[in-house]
Image (tube, rainbow over all chains, first blue to last red; front, side, top):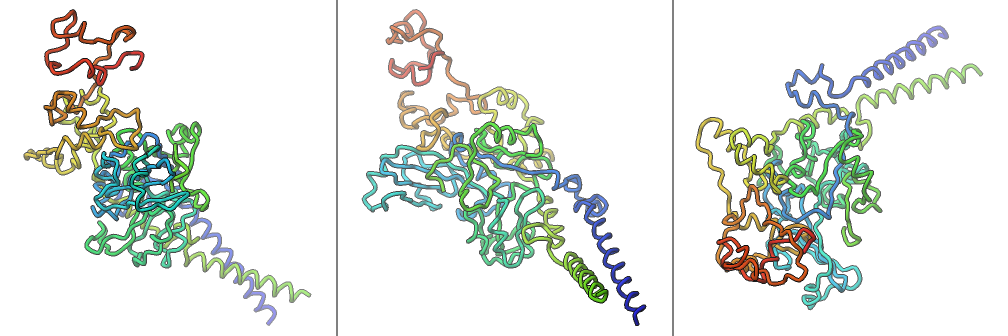
Length: 292
Length: 201
């Protein structure tokens, strides 16, 4: 009786520690190791080690001219539906009047540029009027005309270090990769829109019912991936490539000579809504108090 | 006492066993990629690249590219204006006709260069109506005067403006250093719209 119990415990201990040993060895093999991956035949990703990169995105809003080439290039590159509600990246214009009324417009996400007459773009999009001190009145038209400060703010998914969208997903469909990019596993997504509600930056959208994703899913959440298919091939995201004034910079913080590293070292940097504790990976130069 | 130690050890072993079994079957952390998403980044990474690098255009369009590469428009990619070139390249390589028309070039220039509230003041921009008026009201197409692949800027003048306010006194049609023939309709007031001095305006 006594001997058999000892034997049982000994056997159990061996099994557990043996298992732990095997598990540790398994952890030493990187996820995208060539031995398992080459059989699937995608060479670019086989060379890619997510743990070797820490991607960062810097937007210099003082340079942005609001031409919307970024938003257009993004739609072309990522097969984003042309509907105004579907944007992986877009450009907002902030106009602040003498009375401290903040006017924000982004006609069609800015893909056709901005109207030159100073009025808010008529063509749909997200037009809104925010007020910091007094509520906007209908007769605010005159006040609106006296714009004292105006500028463009390009926006995209912030790829937060603490992403609220990942926290709320009830099926675990959205997750963080080891290089910091937040992705959606659209095979798991059930299209419940929780993540769209949870994102404080409005960076997510639901693929419209008439559309199908390139991998064949319908009615699923979608968002900016920092062009994951490009950055894993060593290319720049499409919006960075398209920007004619260099307002967008992308790079690897692990590389001490990278442009993003240099900009972070040399400039005063801000993020959107820092008080929410999401720790965005998109950093801004030249933000204003009015920007939300 | 030793039976308590044995029971304690057994408990530790059982807990570790549970922990190990759990780590095999569930996501490591709700935030991080676990074995359940192991193939998903590969799917995203495997998507097709649509937008082409401008360098690929040099393969065929070389003289055009040389002038563009030395110009102020070099940060503007080919696809910024010409749209997606993927089909164009595939067709052209197969020897088929592959036109790549520019839709509405006038509006295209103004997308960047119209004077719009919010645009940084240092960026070159024009008030479209005023710009046309300055030039005598005629040209509706920007490319009539400006080469889109190498826009350049009108020459700077080398002398000071100090005490020289009447440009046409020296640069009038019959004067000492006449303005070029295509400047016929321009007046005294319009010179400084395009030309700058080296010391600024």
